[in-house]
Amino acid sequence: MNTPANPINKDITYTSPVNKDIIQSYVLTVAKYDSNIYVKRILTHIVTANQDYIEGKKIGGTIINIEEDLFKDREYTLNAKELLLSNNDKNYKRIYDAFEYLQSKFFAYEDEDVRFRVPFLTAVYGKKRDGRIRFKMSELIYRAFTDYTKGFRKYELQVSLSLTSVYSIRLYELLSGQKIPLKKSIDALKEMFQVQNKYKQVNDFIKRVIEPAKKELDEKSPISFEFGINKKGNKYDSITFYPIAVPKNRDEDVERKSILKQVALSYSLDRVERDYFRDMGFTDRQLKNNHDTIREAKMLIPDLLFELSILKGKMREKKNPQGWIIASLKGKIKDIKNRIPPF
Image 1: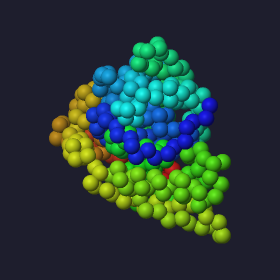
Image 2 (image 1 turned 120 degrees about the vertical axis):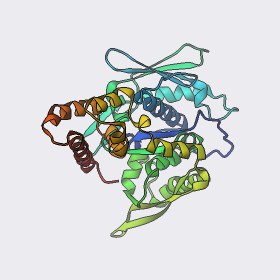
Image 3 (image 1 turned 135 degrees about the horizontal axis):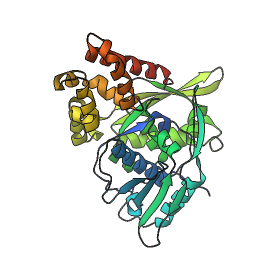
Image 4 (image 1 turned 135 degrees about the vertical axis):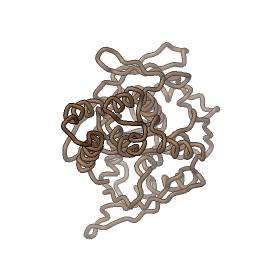
């Protein structure tokens, strides 16, 4: 089944769920997959739900639910209306087509260390006229969606849902949080968007993908870009993106919450993790003073409690056990970052 084209529709007005910053793994950000706007919205809701799930928040309400079975596969229940593009959009068929499309397609990622290819969804089902769609995601792809060891991107939920071109959304995800110029080969970008056979000429790729995406990000996103096309010999080889902040497009409430999260330890650690640190002798003041390291450790280390359990067994021999644990976490963070491929 072919996905629809990705035009920018200026008539779309969308009222999204409660706005917040979303943390998305770099693996998903640069993964190679074809998409349309409905498919991308499904993936955005999955990323949002997974983030709440990881943070131990109750998943529910009118948007999406998650249940985990004995094999750790996740079953999601999503209200189809949440995927519509506006109050005037009644095209539920495109939503069902998008789910069928995802079920037939694979998620692929490759770097110098790993290479994998797994189906997006393992099952899709629901009752007619019920309005809810149930679908399953395997443990393998759930782990890929939530693997932050390769890095991550943080972006604003409402901005992602308001964008009407898949290319705009994916460049928004790629550039969010980027402080320095980002160079990507044209071939890598085409493969990432799965348009290798669509735009043979570089000028067509720039005109149909890059320039429209830039225009939409300028209008709606807190991050946009300028770009330069680079030559290798006589051939255009790569594009350098120069990130540009657009503060007027940033949600002030989300920005304020983001700042609060950076100073509030309760946002970084759940109750079990806080109790574990305290059991190792950490005072609230020590936790607060080392907040940045602990927050980064939780983001990058796949199983923080397991890592702490290893350190706990060795800390009794140390003169300053809490200081040694923090230094060990910093070393672990450095090792993980050294394995992250350059952007």
